[in-house]
Image 1 (tube, rainbow, N blue to C red):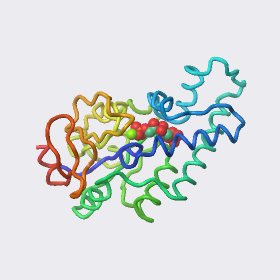
Image 2: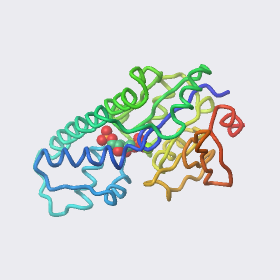
Image 3: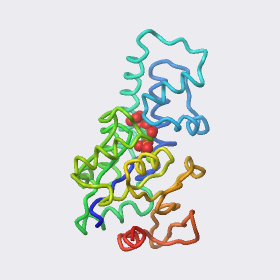
Image 4: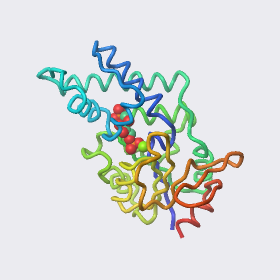
Length: 248
Ligand code: XBP
Ligand code: MG
């Protein structure tokens, strides 16, 4: 029996990576006088690592052998990450990043049907609440019974921990929930937690491996612009009736 929908945030609720997180990282680097500049293609490679602090360290290790780390490098990374969060949440407040097609529609239908909504993400809690406030509704964060985010679990996706943590908070078993993800790291986390998972791809994740997904879609679809199914032929609009049919 389906009781809860658990959503990844970045790339799933909204296309936040290329035009949100990436420029926010760059603004923080500039603020700190660093010559680090993440273009769209490089950022795609850096997305292999989830978590902003982890991603900056990965960048230095893999792409900047010339950079001489200060002794308190971890402190610098933490400060950069705070600045990046400030830039990112400001960008959301200033104009926002729209929700992906079908997201609002499905959230509203699920709420009306009394289903539980949850978030399981590697991004920082402030980023989630800012996105929900500015792109969903003033009380958008209150639509979700659990917001599992950021450093609340030490092992980020692809580890299943954030989903396990969210389900524990809700007192639900995996078979009572379904996850929505956009990336390979994301689906490894959700499948690892025993969750059936619907994938909506984006430009950065189109070539990822989504084996084990319930369905792989272009997006959730709207009546005027249906989704295209990518794992088999088909198109449509993902509502609760179709979701329940897929889940069997
Ligand atoms: C999201 C991430 C995050 C964001 C940046 O992955 O990988 O690191 O890019 O967020 P997912 P922070 O969609 O799988 O949750 O800088 O706040 O960490
Ligand atoms: Mg994602």
